[in-house]
Image (spheres, one colour):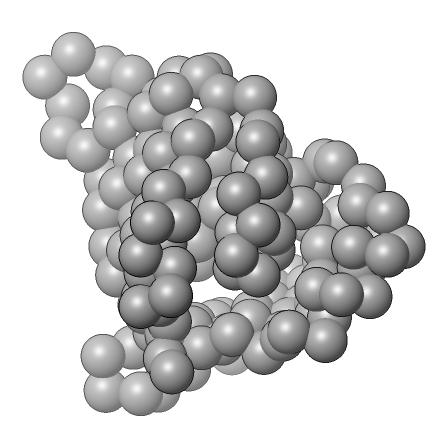
Length: 166
């Protein structure tokens, strides 16, 4: 149960942010959903001699930065966790447990204490190399369904790798 919770929290870490997109962006990004594939997350430790935390999961993402759903799957295809969010709330369903949060940002901050650029994530998925402070995205293999994004500031360093289904 702890491993699934850690998986969910680190995935959520990469799916949340505080920027608000324009209406045009939301409309365009919603039309491109859903996204399906595999993701891998690696978060370096702030503590010396501590091991980085990493995991991988299947995913399905629908919606946009303001309203959406993310489902994470085990290697056997079972649902490990389901997240849904709107501008008013964020809900996490995992292991038969449901937790409610005021916002996706609140969930992320409680879980890992970091903000992640969800607006940029949706832009990267759509093939737009949106620039976000502290982050760099490699979309050079986007046409092949591969995206890599790396956060260097603020610490800890984190990396997100996505392989999209065609």
